[in-house]
Amino acid sequence: MNKQSQKQQKPELLMPAGNLEKLKTAFRYGADACYIGVPDFSLRYRENQIKESDIGKAIKYARRLNKKIYVTLNIYSHNDRIKNIIKHIKYLRKIKPDAIIFSDSGIYRLIKKYYPEAELHLSVQATATNYETVKFWRDLGVSRVILARELSLKEIAQIHKKVSDIELEAFVHGAMCMSYSGRCLLSNYLTGRDANCGDCAHTCRWNYKIKEYVLEEGKRRGEYFPIYENQHGMHILSSQDMCLIEHLKKIIKAGVISLKIEGRAKNVSYVATIARAYRKAIDDIFNGRRFDKELLKEVKTVSNRGFCTGFYFDKPTLEHHQTFANRSEGTHNFIGIVRKFDKKKMLVTVEVKGQIKLNDEIEILTPNKIIKQKINKLYNIGLKPIKIYHPGLKNPAIIKVNPLTNGIKVGDILRERIILN
Image (cartoon, rainbow, N blue to C red; front, side, top):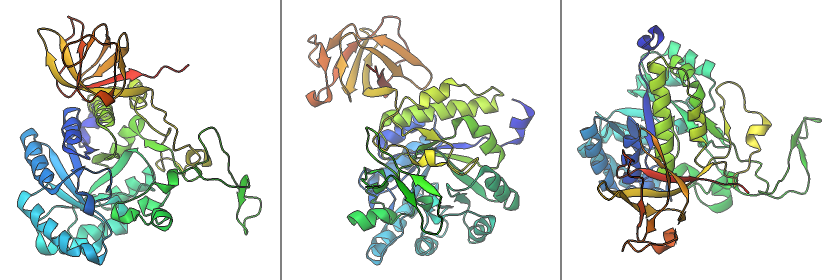
């Protein structure tokens, strides 16, 4: 380990978990902590499968691994939810998560009243953009601030210098919102689904139509916002995804101790791939190794909208905002999860998530390596040879793997490179 690494605290890799399987996958592939929350009180409503009882199970599971669970209670609540929020806080006090993530000052007050000893993390939704805001929450007992996505690396370093006695967390990967720190009213206005209560309709990703090709603000004559359409449609409000895997060393040096990944609505393949890549990138930094460019290729294997560095190094250009939300940049398809591995017969039982065909070239993603295989033998659950299998058939498929193959375990991810014609 080099001298610079010795002076720095190794940061936490914080992954999203929309259900218990994703949580277990995140930990298995390298996460130090996960953030989860029930749909009614966190900013993921429809895609979130976490129940209150699941939080207790998650905490017990994490404790066995010496890892952490942070519970999201970060909606901006209306009156009708207060009674249930109080009940939820009382439940959390019994099961004792490592921290509660909040944004609403009223919810902060309820937590202090009903769970006064709780560790508190300020949500990104609270829009902490300066050191005086960070000081304010520190003085109120908050131990960590999740910084607004709109901050530059320089501003983060300034905040750390001014308020060095509080933990700083920042997003380094995942979807970005067209609204300031995600505090959007567009979804509510167009659909009645309140983004600030966790029910965003992702209206910024929609395909809009317009009769003119340029926008010009009345008082700024000559300043144009170009509008164009391609085969995917017109998505003028949709931002590219954030990806900072190449720049983690600078972010850590600026004072960030928790590197956060967005994506509670993503599938287990995304969770495994991103956790694995960022785990290796962090470990490489603290082992004095250079950035492995293969990791950037790896994060591009899963679906994305194209990557940018957000606000870290400069204000995003128009190019970053004029991506196409329906476009998938992923290089691989997620085709299955290993549910059983018979080492004697070299048979892998697969929960099928995508089409699998005889003679396909596939990859098995494990926490430590990528195993390449050609499907020479494919069976149904009754061990009858078949040529093709797809998720609609519901039962698992069975794949015969190379006799020399080792290292396959339950929970590994199967994927296949997308072949473009």
